[in-house]
Image 1 (cartoon, chains in turn blue, red):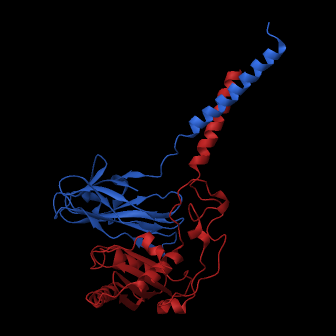
Image 2 (image 1 turned 90 degrees about the vertical axis):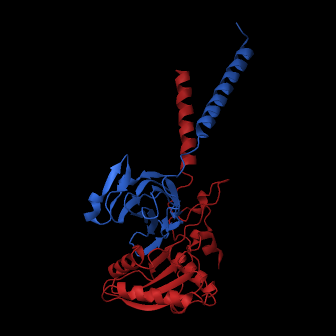
Image 3 (image 1 turned 60 degrees about the vertical axis):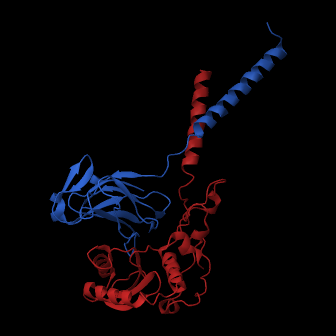
Length: 163
Length: 209
């Protein structure tokens, strides 16, 4: 049997090891980064601005295509996180040519919609393959809102949005 | 038994540390307006509407390190300072300062003002009026009056948010000058980017004093 002073030392070492283990485990778990604030949404979450144009837009794996013979407007609401401020939106879209293109702008508003900020429309610069349209940052105050409007030419497509 | 206690304590501590780091970017309970400071003097060269209308209180939000609604006590060591989140009034005031600091482009400003005037007059709702249009280098400023906030929204939608109008392709910032009150008309100002140009970036907008 071990002497008392040795048993005490052993017990103290075990306690130290437990405390250190707990702290180490806490540090390991806690160092996992919090999820980033980047957000994504699929285009089909939106709708036609003009209700009569709803039948023009058809789904294709979550993307939205304009199946009509003229340019149509589609809107996609985006949710805001904390804190409010300037938000940059990217729209992944595709068009076949300059006559079959897609252009979008982001709009931020305050709660009562007495202040509106638009990024200005940006249009596809390449055709035939998906392109990410980077919109200028828009200001969204606390409790405000954010949405994107896109004009789609015939066969123009909007896939996803990222902000 | 002791092993299970160890596991539970480690898990609780880990969750606590994770929660603290995850919520470090969220606004505190103080909200905007906790520590207002005295209004700044009217900048030199301010427009007529600025001279007639006192500047709003300069809120402490711009001085916050990590978001306008955070309490100063909640500043987290080692975090990258976030872009300040100003109030609508502050954004408008900075646009005004930026606009007045621009050099006039005489080859463009009068033609742009003429185009905007025609578009606005064609799209103003009944009861609204156009007060003034002025263009400088990369921005135009449009001042209008409306019977109420609904008329203002109708005007913004018709003139600026639709691509169909000649000025609907450009970025803009539109706001009422005052909080609307029932039965009283409202004044509004719109800062519109020059066609082919973007609105000033936040860094450029807030760099001017």
